[in-house]
Image (cartoon, rainbow, N blue to C red; front, side, top):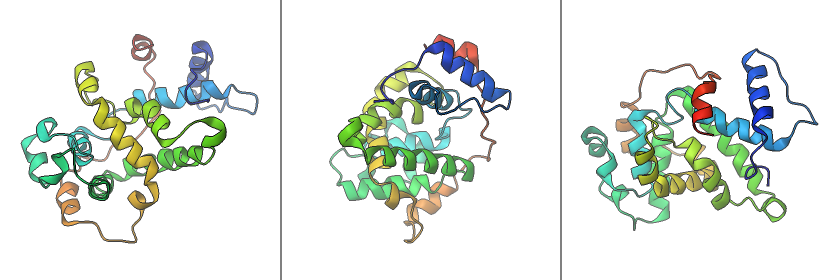
Length: 212
């Protein structure tokens, strides 16, 4: 499966450099593994991450991780239930949905694009073996990376990150829908929203090489 196989580092670097020059280097003959690796590396160097620091702990807690990962003001806006590992799936999905809709507009649109794409990948899981579980294993470290790139934080939150990513992929239509009103918690989380920032293709080659 393309998402599991890393592309050649030289080709990934070449594609990245071309995109940074404003070119479009991807064609029908481009190695699909290189394209997939390019997407994952883009998220790894995304300034501020997909989930800003103000929502990083909250999104992990919403899916069932302990409140110990939260700052006091973040824990205050969540009910006691999200911190438990035995909460039902419906509650977890509702908690994640509240936080997703509290993201800055640019982050929300980016999250929407990637999870909708990943959901489409699962439509062909019989031939590509990429289930929501498998995709979560591959993409969780990139979509829910530690905001300070601390490896200790990354490993301690690995299980929660995988759980969140699986919820995002498996319940994308419910999570992104505006047909139902958000819970009162969403209003509180919205006030945690950081200043909107521009999402750019910022590729720090040296930083990327350190993690290869």
